Length: 112
Length: 118
Image 1: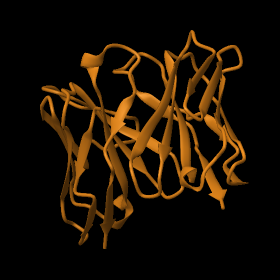
Image 2 (image 1 turned 60 degrees about the horizontal axis):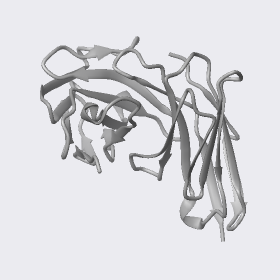
Image 3 (image 1 turned 120 degrees about the horizontal axis):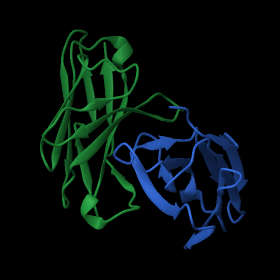
């Protein structure tokens, strides 16, 4: 299945700045999820937003969802060096055992 | 929280060897587990959906005879890479969903297995 697109592919910011990552997808969804991956490790779930939700917050994370544009964004506020990782969006279409289709990912580097 | 354990974390072996990777859900039952493959600096590609007590569902282009999946219990799925060759070298990651937690739940991922075939 086709993957979603994320932009930017790579993002480098200074500690304390905000980081915004965008995700676009192609098909209808049940929910959209954001995951974080540190180099050489598995994925850690960050936020799940349902198709009928428009915005969700968790600590320094804010996710928006626009189903009419088939897009989502992840905002990390007051970034820290420890936020350096790859971030992936993934869509759950609801069928087929709730398979996830992952975006291309954004590599975030937060410099001191 | 839901924890998925994946072993081994790193394997180096000779070409022609078969390699088994285990994925366990430690504190929940997983009727369905997922196996992904990831190349360096790329996204995750779903290889197959592992179903407890039945045959796995493979994605298009994935050789079922090359990548054998067994899901014999509600907490364990195994992926065996048969007669591995250098082109099978990759990062393999499993995940599981806690169906008992209701709908709209995330997947929980293992830490991955880095497979290097010499």
